[in-house]
Every structure is written in structure tokens, then in C-alpha cells.
Length: 582
Image 1 (cartoon, helix red, strand yellow):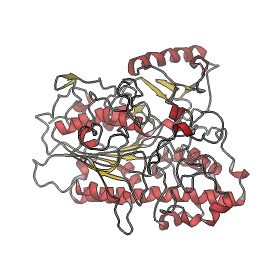
Image 2 (spheres, one colour):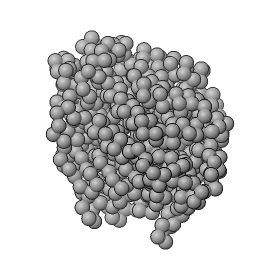
Image 3 (cartoon, helix red, strand yellow):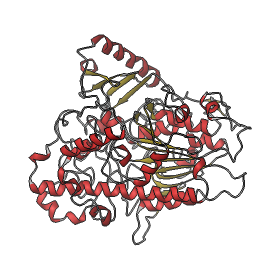
Image 4 (cartoon, one colour):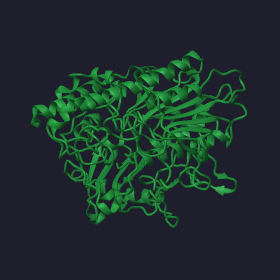
């Protein structure tokens, strides 16, 4: 029988190992939370109650240096393929309308010669099921023959039930099933998170015989992406909790993170992000209203935790839990899109309501009467102890919580792993756990090489090495590069010379939160990292660097303003009920 150490050695076969019996191969459950910041879970310092997720952490492992691609689709492309998103032509969001001539990183369609982990596991004999958010296909695809190449069933899933675009209403979702769009459920008390959890439970029945195929379940919740919608009792449970405000609660979260051992005891809290308002400067009405927004978000997360608890209980009741490899993660840092006022009635639209008008309608938050998102400074709280938030290259946008549970293999439950992990490492890890690997060729066609490396050795040893010493990052022309303990970051002023970008340098071993810029102290090291960034970019991206697509470029200026820019009229697409403008 192949041991975990052998799996982690990289000596694996192109198909399921003949010595790894089906009954011994683990079920694999990947749970993806949406827009949940590094400190938004109880096991990562939060006041938000997530007892079921915390229980997974208590028996499993927490990874405190897990990095994503700072926005949903690039992270999900990397998660499912094991490649950097630029390499698989998903450097940003999927194309609204595909340009067939575009073969660059910004094509917005997953490369055909980049198998997903679902395809790899399916070929290895797994039953593969997906539920929740997809957001990896050009928007023009409608699921019909010839217009569904990027839909889940064509990318390795036996079944898929969920939503196609970046977000959906949690009470009235825009749904797809298989290769077709289906009506929204008309059921009293319906909630999307409960629905997909029920379906995930059904996809993981008690095994009848040792010959039953192992299961791969990809469960991508809409939570906590806006609209923040949840039954009122979950919101009311947080009444008064957020009256302290984001500034004081950042301090509280950092203190808990230190007590938990998730961050080093010497971790510093960076100053409030430029453009974000101080809680002390808000009016009494603003404080009341804004606190209710965050209570709604917190209730949304607690509700999601309950669904995960139902699923874990089912795994235990059916005897599957001990040999189920569970990876729980978030796709990027906390969401920053709604600016200082938040979004009340509709997402990604200017909020024209005054605080007094929102106060008069406060009971509508969390219901199907509103599609709301909290104020940007709450995202600063969610990303404690880092700077910035979703879509930014600082760790507040990139670093998120990750928990791994596998009782049959993990012996030091509750431990914290400090290896530097990137989302591209997850798919190779899952493949090795299943006794298989990503192929070099499929039906005679050469596959894009997998950039990620298995982290399976970390399951058994806190001293296992990092999967790689270097990892590059780029999103919307903002750049970062990690080499060992060093990390360099550049925020790009759009439509300016890239050579004028100002780089910052951090020693992340000594300075976990990137609080102190060392660019002037170690200029030679910074120049070395800048050259390294270009080397890695030329390896993984075509072109290695470019301005963000125009539609994205006009939205986030990446300056010190507290608001996003409105979409110019000539770039506004036809209305779609659940389109994402991150």
C-alpha cells in the first residue's frame, strides 16, 4: 500500500495506482468560500461564530501562508488546473464575448490543453460532482452544443448544479444544471447555500461495496460574496457586536490571532488603509447602519458554517469522514468593491441613499428586497492583519484562510503549518492523494505544464519544505514576487510607464503583516526581485505584463481614493441579473 510519504515524493503514475485500492483512495471535498478574508473565521481570529469550520481546524491543519490570485476567476482557474491563471488564459475574469483571435493571457477562456483536477480524477475512476459558483466560462456560452466548451461537464464533472457567473441572489438564484439553465426554485424559505449542501450530501452516500468509486465534490458557496443575504435570525444574533467599529475590532482580531498562534507574537497592525474612514469620524446614524451591514455578513458566514456542519455530520454518519480529504479555503481577500457607503439596493451600482434613508429601511438588509455589500473598511477588518483587500497585490488581497482535514493521515490535529503555499499547489496535492497525476499528454495533445507542487508532505510534517522557493503574482498590472522570506510588491498607476511603478520590499519572516517597507534599506535585494519577477512573468504569461482590460481598468484606480469609479457608458454591457464587476 502506498504511504503518504510515497505519495508526497512525486513518484506517482499517470493513472490510478494499481496498488492503491479503490476502498483506500480518499474521497475529496474542496470547499471554496467567496470573498472571505484571512481573519473572518473563528479559527483565524474572528468574532464570527464558525464552530463547524473550527472543528475541522481542531482535527486538521491551518495554513497561515496560503496565497490566492486576489480575485475569483483567476484563483479558481489556478485551483482547478494547478497552473498560474495567466498561463491558462484566465488572467482576469472570463470574457463577456470571446475574441477567437486572442491567444494571450487575457483571452478569458480556460485553455483546452490544461486539464482540470476534475478531469484528472475522472480519468482515475472518481465520480466527480460540482455545486455552487463556476465563473470560468465566457459569458456568451449558453450551454448548448458548440457553446459549452467551458461549462463544467466539459471540464471533467459528471454533474454540476449552481450558477454560471460571479454572483447570484441567494434566495432567487440564476441556476444551471448540467448543460442547461433552469428556473429559480419557488420554494418558501429557500436559500442557495442550503440547496447545494443538500445536493453535496446526496452525492456522498454511504459506500455499499469496496468497489464503489471514490467521490470528488467541489462545493463553491456564494457566501460571503455579496449580496449578503441570510434569514434574519442569523443577523439578529450579532446585534450590538459591531458597534465597536472596524478600527477597534482590527486590534481585537489581531490579539486573538496571536493567542491562537496563527500569526507570530511580534506581528504589527498596519495603519488604516488610505481612503478608508475612521470609525470615530462617522455620524451616529452611520455607525448604526454600517454595524448592521457587518452583522448581516457575519450571519451569512455563520449560516454557511451550519451547512458545512451538516455535511461533515453526514460524512461521519456514513463512515466516510476519516478517509475524506477536505480542503476549505477562500478565493481572495475580503471584498472592497462597495466603497465607503456600501451597496444597499443593488450590487455594483452607486448607492444614492443617505444614511438616514438606509436606516429607515434597515430591516431590508439580508432579505430578497436588497442586494447589499458592506462598506470597504469592513473588508479591512476581514483582511486583518494585512494591508488592503480583494484585487490588491498586498497580502490583504492575496492571503486567505485554508484548512485541511484528513483524519486518516493527519496525526497532529489543530497544528498550524507555516509553509508558503499557493493555490496552484492544491490540484497536484489532490491528484497525488488519489494515486494519480496530471498527464503530460491527452489524446496526443501536449498539456500545459503544471506549475504547482504537492504539499502532501506538510500533512505529516511541520518541517516539510515549501513546495517552491519562488512564486510570482500579477493582476491588473499590479505585481508581486516572493522568494523565500522576501516579498516585493508594486502597485501600478494605470496607463503610466511600468518602469515608473514604485516597488515595496518586505521581509515576511520577520514582518508577517508586511507592515514595514524595506525597499530603501535593501535596494540590491529589491532589484534582484524585480529581475526575478520579469523572469517568472516571461515563463508563465503572454505577454508578461500589460494594462488591465479596459473594462476592469476604469473601475479600480489603485490609488488612495476610498471609492471605485463608475463604469463609463460605452463600456456598460447589457443588464444581467448576476454579473460581477470586481
